[in-house]
Length: 189
Image 1 (cartoon, rainbow, N blue to C red):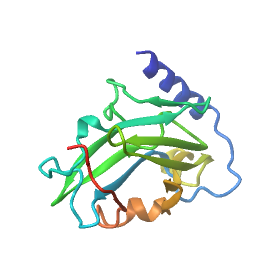
Image 2 (tube, helix red, strand yellow):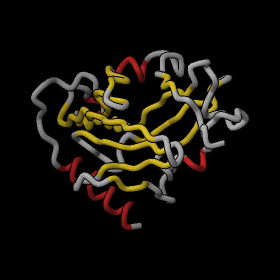
Image 3 (tube, helix red, strand yellow):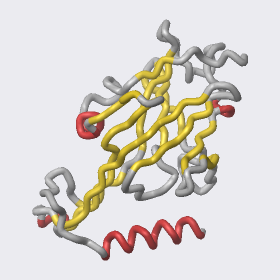
Image 4 (cartoon, one colour):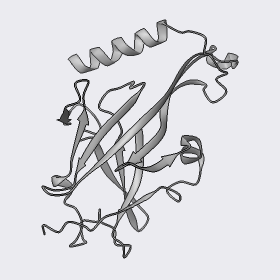
């Protein structure tokens, strides 16, 4: 109950502290808050490494997400009250699986965030995210004129750019253009 109260308090303070943005908010109507990201995990041969029927696939129960906190420590994420209780979930998309990951352990992260994906006891990757945050008034009277906007601006995977341009990512073809990371697979099987 305490995390829900904290999240509600933060949301209420954001709504009550509306200010004019330094630039027009043409991309924002009402509230748009999303700090999730999707990508495929495949071998060099195109094997789906999230498919539980694949002997080289990562065991979903072994995958752990660690978020960097304010003190620059990495903390394992597990929150039973959250839909994404372990910081990720795997979706079936046609013939492949896709990893949906929360980019931050903090709701309303307005700066940068870093996380570590632990695939198994010997295989780890880092994802760093810069968030884009804006709030203020927009010109759409049907939304009451208020805007709160939080999306990722840039995502780095092990130091290399994995994605930019959140807008085409969200509004482009569904599941078609999502990035693929290439891994060796679960060699511990």
